[in-house]
Structure formats: structure tokens, C-alpha cells
Image (tube, rainbow, N blue to C red; front, side):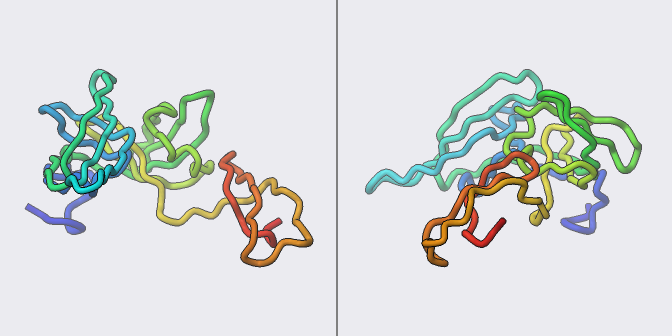
Length: 183
């Protein structure tokens, strides 16, 4: 079997066990034998107890929601996934449409399935989709995205360089805090 980067992208990844503390939102894990997408994670470290990871999960097959608390030393089984490159085309309401770069098939994912990724999707951008049993279940954007600032609050003349940041809105609608010199 090929390992890591030597494996062709369309071949399913074998399931892997990783610590609960390394699970990220959007990943698909096997929970009670069922593939579930991680919707939310919260790391809890209560006083002199051991750390825990609280996870909100959604079944890939049925959409049923689960909540579970894992100990930080627990190993979690990632579901075997396939990776495919997609191009983001457009969105209509809560539906986001992509096109496969390999087969030119159209793929639709909902805002709920994509999660926070919708804040970084720009038309014609390339993304990596994770497929489980031939169905797209999540999308990963590149580590670095170039987004335009479309709106900012006015610059304060009395603000110092390290003082208060101001609100800015990106082309995707995401609101962030930026230094005073950004226009």
C-alpha cells in the first residue's frame, strides 16, 4: 500500500487513529461505527482533572446530531476518505455549487455542511473536497487565501500603531479586525 503523499489522490485513505485533541471541525470520524462530521469542538481543562474534548457531531448518512465528550488521551478513528480537487462556482441561498476538476461533475453542498469555510470561498477558487463512499462531505480551502477588503471603519487620527484595531468587511462578507492603516 502507498503511504502519505505517494498515494494517488482519488484512492481512499485508510482509517487512522489520532488523539482526540487533534480532531478539527470538518473532519469525518467513525463514532459508534457510523461516519460523523465534526461540527464543533471545545477543549475543556477543568482544574485538577484530566483534559477533555467536547464534540458536536452530525451523521454523514442521516444528519442526526450527537454530542460526546472524549478524554484527551482517547484515540479517535478517522473515516477512510477520498480527496478530489473542486472549483467553487457560485452559491444560491444556502447551497454552494462546485465543479470537479477531474470529471466536470457538479457538486452541491449546503452551508451547514461547509461550516466556517463559506467565509473563505471566492468564485473560481480551488478547494479540496473530502469524499466518503462517493459523496462529498466536507471542503478544505488552501491555508492562504487572498481576499479583498470591501469596507472599513474610518481611521482614527488619535489611534496609535498598536492601539485599537478597526472593523473591516471582506469580499466574502466575513467581518474581521484590522490595523488602523488598512483602507
